[in-house]
Amino acid sequence: MKKTFYILLTVLLLVFALPVTAFAAGEQDGRVVLGSNFILESGDTLEGDLAIIGGTATLEPESTVTGSVVVVGGNLEADGLIEEDLAVVGGNANLGPEAVIGGDLVTFGGNVNRGMAQVEGDVISGEELDFPFSFRFERWFEGPLGFAPAIRTSFVWRVGQYIFQSVMLAALAMLVTMFFPKQTRLVADTILEQPVLAGAFGLLTVIVGTILFVLLIVTICLALAGVAGIALLVAGWVFGLIALGLEIGERLGNALNRSFQPVMAAGLGTLVLTLVINGIGFIACVGWLVPFLVGAVGLGAVLMTRYGSRPYASAAVEEPPAPKKRSTKKS
Image 1 (cartoon, one colour):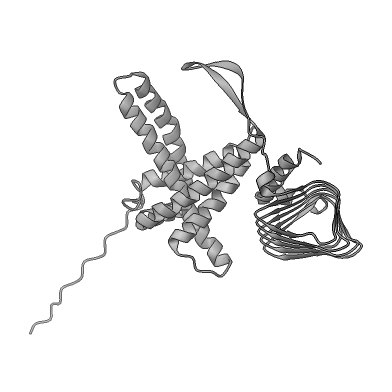
Image 2 (cartoon, one colour; image 1 turned 180 degrees about the horizontal axis):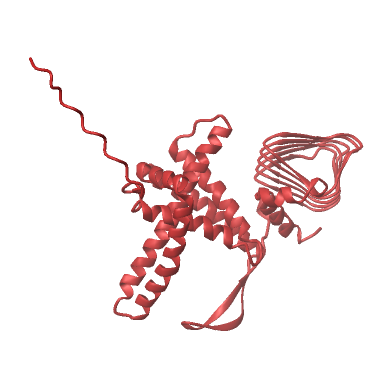
């Protein structure tokens, strides 16, 4: 019915993945059900969209959702009116006999029991989805290395890349924590103990280091040293994010009264961290600031601990303990 539904679905998933964006909308702009239960009683109307992420929602008969409904790993019992689209991604939906879907019904890795429900739009399964990935070389611009094409990709492609990068970094975090648990823990502790100093050190390193390594690359003779330096900075940047993800994962486990192993905590925390900070990057003009600052703090802590090889020595010098007095008692 509406080819633009694919973009709508992607936008909804992106917005619902960002707590800042979702809660800034207000009560009348939709509802996010995150690991909890929600009931829209008979006769009630929900203005906006409804997202069920790992939770359960019930739409009673004669209830109305004026927007779209997205189910991600959750459960939906619907017997009311959904004025726009219904998308089920890795979840379950049971449509009652009085349920009406005003738009499309899309399933991707989920289960939908339609029953006698009325679907006014198209019914599309996962294998039929055709995301509009596109690359267009619209114009050429002149950069420091000469002329290069300005590549413009579709919004859906960028969102797919954002999710893929987050998942891959989470997998890398599990591997790094598996082989270097002490180093990762040491960097995470340094971030907690010295966040301001780590951020300042990281910012200074990014600015000075980038200029220095680019100059080395331009000299040709020392290009290899410049490339190696940039590689070390990138590795430190990623290592810092993983260490911060470890701390976030452990705190999530405490909040959920669960005890995660460090490997699992690092993977979960890094996934949540990258989804949030990279998602904020979609905000025009200022979206880059939060990911950059978070990465700088992590990089600073990595460099302060020499890539987790030794604790950071505080500037404060402890006074040596007073020498013990020898006993003068004569035998």
